[in-house]
Image (cartoon, rainbow, N blue to C red):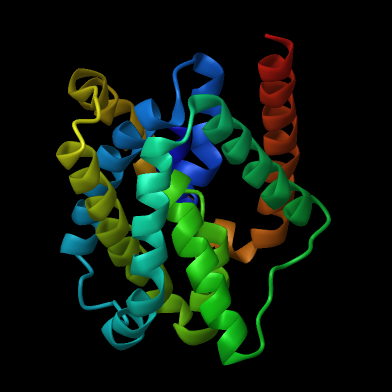
Length: 230
């Protein structure tokens, strides 16, 4: 429900903000990422079916040249790295985002080469854990008008997750299709609420992120503590 809400409410962050909660339940990132991926493909398709014209295709095509190669490197890293390393990586990245949002700081770029660097790093992080959205969004916000931003990001996430899911299938990664399907109605509730509240969230973006940051800092810190004590 939370990942569905964040994905449509903010336009990004379903995995980045939802994966830390899922890891508290158990299993590894490799187990949960296909579940998140299936939901993202389904709900982004539904959203785009009504607003496919509100996408900045020109900028998206140029950005993909810098995002896709490191994403592929990250995907294979995800499959090869141990579960413990992946869990520490996810929680550490989440804590980084949380601290930035709590103190109302922003990852900013004012030059083309910094844009490209953020897209490359964001692509790698997205490939390895689907948590690279905040880095990529920073760049897209500079170049895509607000009314096209969310839908342009939906197309980007659809492409990146498709690559990841195809790689999972090709590498025979176990995908819990039954759980993914059972959770669709729950995710749909969050998806619809996010659609309804999107405009209000964007207007109160800083306050919303501050509270999210506090919650994520507590969750991720607890997750790391539990991991190291186990």
